[in-house]
Image (cartoon, rainbow, N blue to C red; front, side, top):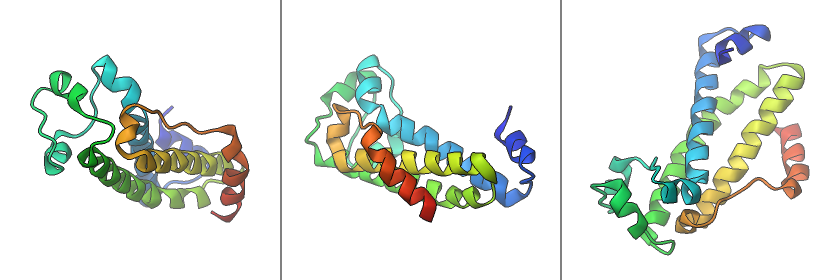
Length: 153
């Protein structure tokens, strides 16, 4: 079932809501990419945008050969991840208003999904280039804070 169908189930059917839903879904996928760098790169999977890499002084012509050369203390990688996190955060922030339109349990689940993803994104940004070797995760200890924030979202 598509996300649009899910919005219809909750009588949320307008262009802005669909755009916000798309923004949340896109941000979730990007957060997953940034979160899994330490897992994906050793497996030869590369999701960092080449244009962004070049813009941060990271010239990668053949990802599978060049990626292992990236170091977890490289300031360029840290700047790249900071930039990617900022863009992804903006996308999620745009979509986050949708949580106020989805009623009931689904609305609360959406709030927690957005907040949990933002928590992982912030960890990724804070790790900087160390995200190449350390995977940020959502820990159970974050639950009280996420629940509190969901009340005030």
